Image (cartoon, rainbow, N blue to C red; front, side, top):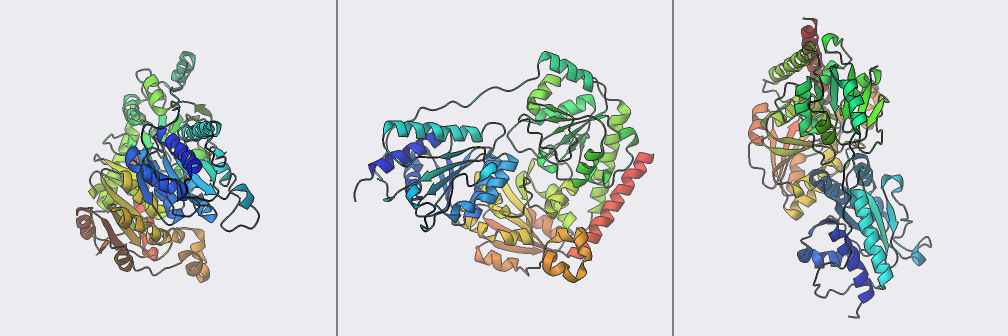
Length: 573
């Protein structure tokens, strides 16, 4: 076979630049135009300790890579051929941008002479993802001259660094390739031939004057922390200690990572407290400090919109992503840095304020526990049982009803349970794939809680468990359709509701399990679910829980009403 040295040298330099910046996890979507990249990645796998995953469904591949990036907090490379393959990455790219995940998307492309001229499998890939990537680079056609190689090595590293710089996010490299596409697969020796760029270091801190002013504004006041989803590797562990020192409650979203504590100031009962808002009386805060992304709770967001006190957003990127429009000030630093600077400087809140919040949370936790001391398996019971019965593990949760149930009934536990969810665009697409991406980088047990519609939407993703021997236990809540719509106004349009919103798929989960060689179990009671969750999590397991959408609405509203009444009663006392 004729040598293809120029192409080989060029693509090898791209790979060397990626490896120099720590990119070792790669998801490849098979295709022709990406041949030299895929082959040389495989050829370099042992040398660079690369972990390669192959997913024939591009949409699944991108969400799989997203799951890996989300849990590992490391950049993940996506590689695909030209044409609509790249377009199928788009939903996951959007999710990565909204949740600040470092995806490196490398799309291969037709050369310029085959673009916009009717050539097959060719679309305009220039800035394909628009504003949903932090940076885009159109790489030059392959050449072995030193200037081109140095430029490519520098530019590839520059984009990887951009993906990991606050705010983190996806980047896009577009690589046009001419035939012949077969590279030379000769033995490769020696270190990468690139000049490595060191990652930026340093963290923004408040100046002495700014710190003095902030302490004056916060000290002795009735403060409230709102902790939304934690999407980066920033350390929030000191926040609980600071909160306890000053007596400020933390309204902790399940995705914040702060519910893994027995602190009485970590509050999980706010959904009922603000639905609609009840009179807080002694628990009324004077100011709010908000950290993290948008909380799951819509009722909390509604309360925040109406709050007339100062709301300070801790945001290292200063992007002001606050749809409630409540923010009145921004602190441009990390949570860990702010906690370090404030610790020991603030006078505490009045004891009656702290005690009021502690009482509310205590009542809420007690009533939730009492409500679920039953063998009747409702959807809320599933969330509560997973939260209380699953040991140290990673749990991915689907959007729509499952994450809302976890928000309300996943009360704080002292065991290490990390919750994950794609809460950027709040979509149900790609959830199975993201959960399997989580499992691919996890060193602990892995679970997914998902509804039947989201499960059906990403069944292709199950193939990754089979292909790469990934262990994941999936709890499928099967209410035969889109359960969340039964809570919305369109449920009143009874003549049109089922075909347009309910959309029953009559999915046979047992048949899906057989297709993907998974173990399957149908559970009909709380005891059955508890027993199933205690079993080994090796391989792919499907646990089906069948519920009724209409009964679920009644059960949720009845429980919410009871919880709210108990909290109001204790506020009056």
